[in-house]
Image (cartoon, rainbow, N blue to C red; front, side, top):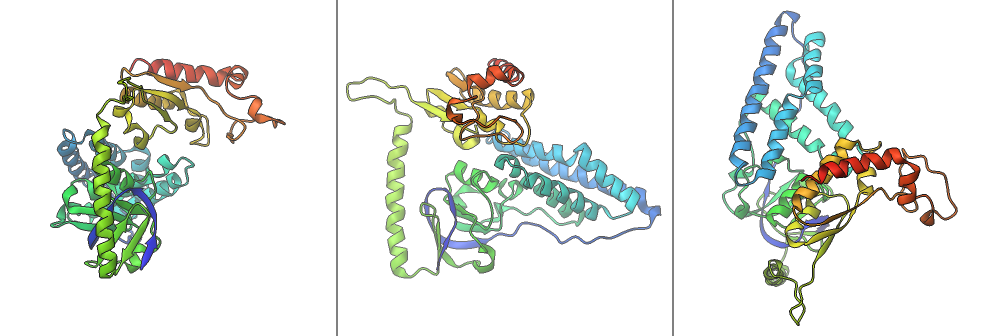
Length: 383
């Protein structure tokens, strides 16, 4: 059988399937006698402290070898102690007398739904962090031990509904042949992990968990975006050859990454990079580029439902300039109109918008927007 999905990290894998199910309990509403309010509030605080302890342990373990990954768990600690979330949970315990696990489930689920509706796909994926923290708190509340992919004892194809940061925190790369999930996108945590570890991955396979079987042999073609189950000998032999060809081509390509781009007569050519969203997928190419020829800042303005603040712009620009330290970065100020519009920016209709109020004309027309962007860029230039 052949099932289609979105290939997010190229490669071919053949092996046994390991069906992984992260901890996600069903929580029902339970109330308590008001006289026990202080007891349950105390237990909620203890649950948070235990969660912080687990997260700090993971953070410290990763901080030296994988600092970027460690930042995820530092952010999770911040979520555990988020003022708004904590206040709502405490209020539910104190005023409604519902047990903390139900309050945690309800409040976090509300925020997860809200973040999941964001227009920016990167912001939408932050719902995974909220879900991860929620599940951790509920697991601790229920006295269940940690569960993650460090339990893998042999090379397998990992199949899951989705993978959260905690699931892959201590993942052993050599025991993961491929990743296949029922949900997830190009910006999801599963995709980021797969690409950073160069693990073949197909995400968004419809109804995956309803048909995939633990221990069965499967083929993951993360070039064509196909999962093949119950393969016969001919299919296995064919994909073994495809896998070997892909390995050889990949090794050839990698051999050129650290070489200078030279013409036959020895002339060096500078290699530039264009950037749109400035996400990790784009920035991972930074070591191999000499400059950024064009940073299209309009994608930052198109990622939300309101104008990005100076601080938000500064953080994005700073991140890019830090990655391209000592290399030229050409930033294009807001160029909106024609094929790109902003719902919160009221621009009049034009007969020929491609030659209308856009680019520098828009900047002069709206100095309030222009000056904020210039200030953010100027501040970021220090990095």
